[in-house]
Image (cartoon, rainbow, N blue to C red; front, side):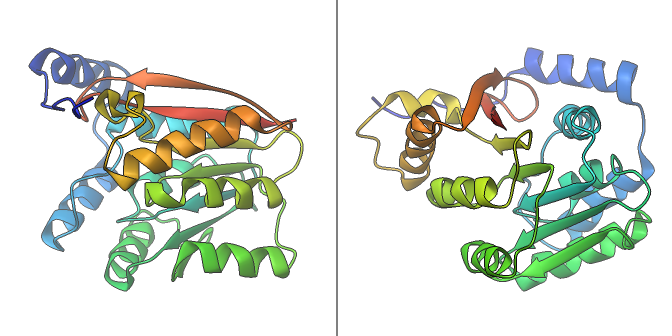
Amino acid sequence: MVDPPNRPDQGFAAVDRYIESKLIGADVALAATLAANAAAGLPDIDVAPVQGRLLHLLARMAGARRILEVGTLGGYSTICLARALPDGGSLVTLELDPHHAAVARANIAQAGLADRVEVRVGPAIDTLAAMQSAGEGPFDLVFIDADKQGNVAYLNAAIALGRPGTTIIVDNVVRAGAILDPDHPDDRVRGTRALFDAVGAHPRLTATAIQTVGVKHWDGFLLALID
């Protein structure tokens, strides 16, 4: 199967903007974050505003006091999640690129959240292994949005650093339908298919996945609960 085009659909984008205008409204800190990311040359792959609000609501619904994020970029999703934390809550976010991490730290500080967010720099798999060795956790919610080739390793680390009831969210799991192709040459698609296999076979996970359309085109996220 050929990877289908993931061109923007004007109707999808318009509905996203309608939802954003009616239910979210202007957000100075998040708008400044996107502007700072663009000025710093970061790729435009942040979650959409409606998806950021979804992350925020899921964290609140989970009653999360400790959040782990794998893949920081410029901190847009980090801010959405950190805003859901109660007093005394904390978020650890992992970023490979030092430049991205520096931009994210500035954005997080500008949003007034530096006191509850820690950005750790380096390969996430190494940082996660060190966290497990140090006995960190349990985390109440884990958001995975990093290199898709590492999805299964990040999932396993999330389970190890979680507890019964921990929510795990993985972004970009539909990839414009490319996940249907078992012979797809893209390692990101192969990593995503491996994630589905791992989650479906894991005895401690109850999960589903939701397709999404909007300003970020056709994709989706996987949602799992540790039993």
